[in-house]
Image (cartoon, rainbow, N blue to C red):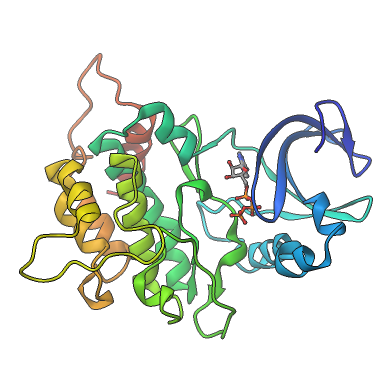
Length: 298
Ligand SMILES: Nc1ncnc2c1ncn2[C@@H]1O[C@H](COP(=O)(O)OP(=O)(O)OP(=O)(O)O)[C@@H](O)[C@H]1O
C-alpha cells in the first residue's frame, strides 16, 4: 500500500487511496511531469508472493488495458492505459473524473430516490448499448464498477471483464448480479447484462440485491414470490416495479431486448426534456445531466 506523497513508477505522486479490488489497488495521483490529476491502478503486491493468486487475478488489470484500446471511442467508459511498472508491479493510469463509486453514493443517499435511480440506470444504458452495438458484453455490471462524477455524469470503470460476444472467454460473474443462465454456465449476452443492470437498479433504490446472493431464487408462476424477491419488490417504489422486475426476469427472453428498451421505459419516469426548468428549482446533478443531454439530442 502506498501513502500520500510516495511516488509510483518514478513519476506519479500519490494523493489518496481510492479503493482495492481483486486485481488492483487504486490511487488518486498527480503526474509530476505534466501536473495532470490521474487515477492509478496497480497490481496487488501479494500477487508477487503467491503464484496461485498471480495466476488467478494477477494479469486482470492488463486485460483492462487491452479492452480499453478496443473500446476507446465509446463515451461513458473510463478507460485505463498502461502506465509502466513499479518494482515489477504493472500499473495503469486513467483520467480522474473525481467520481465515487455507486456503493459510496448509495450509502450516502440511502436509498437513492426513484427519479435519480431511473436517471442513473438510463444514463448507464448509453455506454452499455454502444458496447453491445459493437459486439461486446460487459459481464460485470455492479455498483462497484460505476462512478458518479460531481457533474452528475456516470462512468463505467474496470472494463477488464468485457469481451466480444463471439469469443469463447473463460466464465466470469459477480454473485448477486449474475444472471441465472450465466450462473449455470451459459455465455454472457446482452440479456445477462440487462439482468445485472436490473440488480443494480434494486441496489440503488432499496440498498439490496433482489435475489439470493449465491444461486438466485426462482419465482414460481402462480405462487407467491420467494421471501427475498417478494421483500425486494415490496420495498421498491411502485413506479420502478414494472421495469425493475422485467429486467431481472428469470427467462432472458422475457427481459427488455437491449439497453435502448430499458432507457425508453425509464425515460417515462424522468422529467420531460422539452419542459423548461422551473425558475429557482435546480434539479440535482444526475437529473440535470440527463436533462441537458436529452435537450441537446432532441
Ligand atoms: N477512476 C476511479 N475514480 C475513483 N474511484 C475509483 C476509480 N477506479 C477505481 N476506483 C475505486 O477503486 C475500487 C476498485 O477498483 P476496480 O474495481 O477497478 O479494481 P479491481 O481490482 O479491478 O476490482 P475487481 O475486484 O472488480 O476486479 C472501485 O470500486 C472504486 O471504488
